[in-house]
Image (spheres, rainbow, N blue to C red):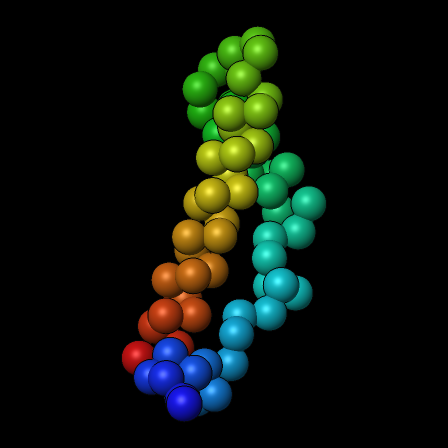
Length: 68
């Protein structure tokens, strides 16, 4: 039995992991976020996670726009 999700998966290929943000892209944005906040100590993990999340969200929005 073929489900609607299976049919959609055939029509729209999965997003490649190759367009996951690079280490360098995340690092650059994390540094910019850290700098904007005045270089506070002990927040590098928060800045890294936020940068990665923002870049992934931007990529997902672009992919969604391309598919629409």
